Amino acid sequence: MPELLLLRDDTPLLRCPLYGQTVTVGKSPANDISIPDEDAPPLLCSFEPAGDGYRVVSLHWDASGRIT
Image 1 (cartoon, one colour):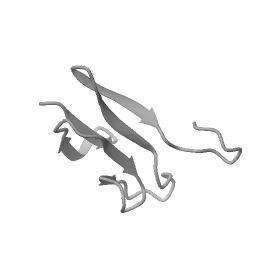
Image 2 (cartoon, rainbow, N blue to C red; image 1 turned 90 degrees about the vertical axis):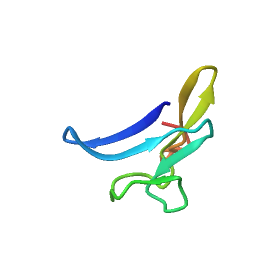
Image 3 (cartoon, helix red, strand yellow; image 1 turned 30 degrees about the vertical axis):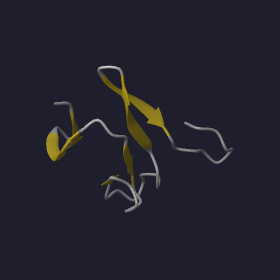
């Protein structure tokens, strides 16, 4: 089963299995995975099922209104 592993300085912080659904990541507690980092955007990205795996979709908008 695919999983998402979040690291800080090579130290695992969170291991999240991906069960075939879209998973959102960002600072906001409304996300499936909330990152406790002041510098993180409220909605950073999502992991979306794609074929036999996942694709990462950037959802962070910069000050000019572009996705970065």
